Image 1 (spheres, helix red, strand yellow):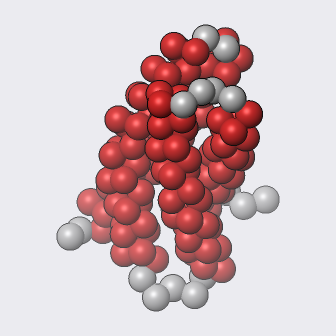
Image 2 (cartoon, helix red, strand yellow):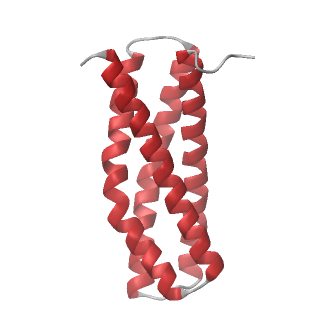
Image 3 (spheres, one colour):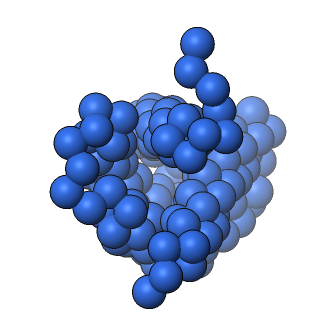
Length: 149
């Protein structure tokens, strides 16, 4: 595969993963603030059905990133690889929480257990979003689109 194609796929996967996390986070936050049980259920249903987007985009992000990095020992690339490992670990936690929150909102009650899990999901989501932004920044530094200070 040509390098330009890999770069394009990596860029698109980054956008998709970032926007998906922002969408999930924002919808969950609005649902919690609104406090409408049906809206919370609808948001959790949407997130559950949209999870395959993350299941497809995250490995593409990892694979294209690995392909672009090769065997480089550049400290920026090594930092991106470490952050990617954390993102994948966090992503597994987020997917588990998404399934749990869907199940809890539909087949149990929205109680303190739900809210604790929701807070955990917010924490994992913010962490992953931060890692995505840091990796995107590092990628722009590597490509020369962002200048070092």
